[in-house]
Length: 459
Image (cartoon, rainbow, N blue to C red; front, side, top):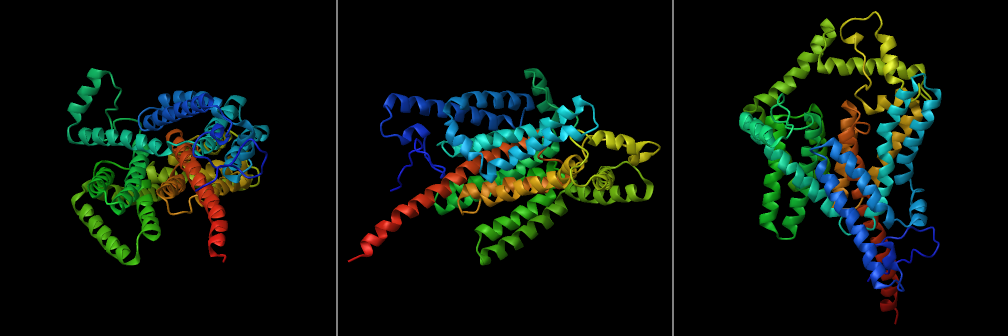
């Protein structure tokens, strides 16, 4: 039996509750308690829609974030919420936003540009509220189910557009849906976002299948495995970002280390090796992606040609130079484009390109806010990774979200980018709240059971 904590009493310890703060008071009238739960559930339903909209629409995500904030506001115990902001898991995202605001003071960019560059960090302000809310919500699991269901629908359309592009796009035009027509297999947004979503689903389904199998739900477990393979096959056969080829082996290694015995680990590694060899043989797309990376690097180094790999290397080379010019506090918020513009004068080829994003999250922060920004970014990743220590499924899902964002941020700015950034904020916010609640409940249970055990042991 786990005792409940009365949030009405001042305490330095943050309460962990399975329902709303109102439910902790024994004197709370049933009608008020019911109303509080209805408001909390309404915020949960908006969160379901928000998660489901992520794979499809940026505009809808922006609208639903505002709706979620409005529906969540009446459920907040502001005293408890303010105290929760002192935890590093919440304080560090806020600090990154504050740094972006303060960084406008030493930037030489136009004020419109400075204010624009605050925007990508603003989404981090939602993360502490998500953690607070889903420490108390009963429906966090359904947020991820909604995201999985939406990605499954996107997977079906991706395969259809790969196997029969005219059919898919004719249907889309008839119903007025703005599908893209220039990338087969990517009906909406871009292949980088789609790849991240599919990798997340594939590895989330892996741990779900393991838990279902252990609970003797064998048919459902097999269905989860099959769906996970469908996501991975789309990545390896239809289209994927190169980031996926880096994150998949790393996430597979973490999965094996954390959740699989040594004997099974060896068997799965051998199986994965055989599967990769087979896919390499039967998938021209996979071979072409790997071979193109080598070719692009050669064209960049030998001929200064503009290629995808060459562009990144050039952006990173210049980013190091810009960082060393002002290593401690950077050049200020919104300074990236101006630095690239000044450096491009008199140059040709890829060296003359001007960008607003160096396609690397570390450099994105280092150029604007120096080691201060990079230190806060890395501290946030470390703290968020550390809250997913236990062996529950939600800890594995949270680990995927953090690791995938770190890996993706090597090749892109996945905190600052819209879709990938919101996946991180919503995913870590929901999973973090659930994980913190699990740890707090487990600690309470141990504190309650310890005296009982001593009483039973005493003569």
